[in-house]
Length: 185
Image (cartoon, rainbow, N blue to C red; front, side, top):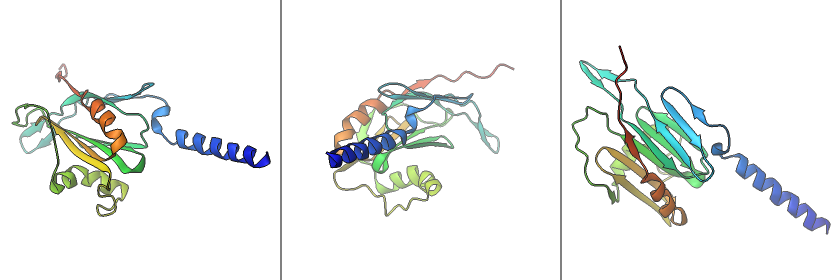
């Protein structure tokens, strides 16, 4: 009986630790440039950044969007114009939006197998930030890596467990552009 009681306490402790390690169980995040809302069955990320980037005489305005994301987030970052969302076992969703003045036309949404160069370009800043080694976190067997894109948005589903893939894809298909409103002068 004592062993069963000890085992029950151990299982409960592990469960509590695991659940508390997800960041999407805490308070929502609101700022002028983004919102991260942790709902019951999913999360909602809103990029509403209006800070433009300049190079020479060109001004690049960020594209704003709303996207639903799966629960159990362990880490997220917004680096430049790319959102990185990490889940247990190095499953990563990477959302890249073209700037408003990029000369890109919106095309049909398609799900493709990305080449290694595309994956490395999209993930390199995040991996560097997290001190990950590209060779150590290559997509594993029984994992799925796909790029969902329409030319304006590129969403990399990297190293996703087979059992999670359909749900992850369903969630990211919710992405919608929020039209930019120039600030009043």
